[in-house]
Image (cartoon, rainbow, N blue to C red; front, side, top):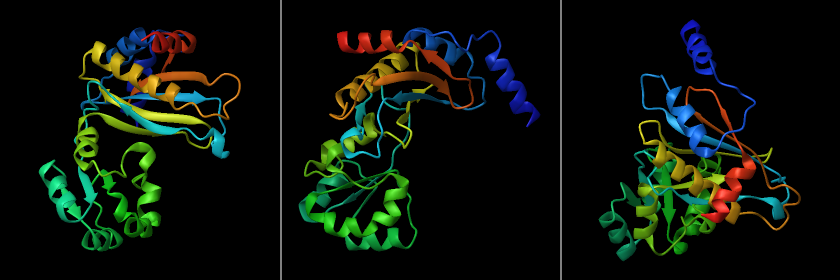
Length: 236
């Protein structure tokens, strides 16, 4: 614990935690303070002016990160026949139907993402209590219920990350690794912010994006100038 406390204190040294930064400045500060012995994830937290308890204020979608997420993603696909063969050819680690459902119900969850063809949803729907709490339930809104399984697999393995507003209206998402260049991380951050703007629900009133902070897994949060970031995203 003492080592962690010292690292936190060192990361905060010289950092004005109330100052607002551009995305590029924030990324530079985050990288400079990532001192863990592993390749930390760069994380973005966005406070939105929404109440997800209301259906017309729910925020959910997918951000396609241009420089990838840095994660190795294992994909499971529910499909039969030609679509199952297509999924295997596209690089899915696990492909099945009833057999796959039985393995999941038995607690065998050795994958990060689940994709399903539409005809498989009656079967997959029975797994809601298992997949739902893990955020793995396929959903057409985020492209994981589709006949184009090749694209869905490529997106999942390439740089597509799902986001969803939590109860307090906060979206928390990993956008790369600290080993990425500053430019690559900043591009990924802007891609996430752009996707969030596009996902603005009809029921959102007042200021939509209220606060943005960027951090590494073990590092301090660096505040971003919300107005500047949103304007840059809209202009980009």
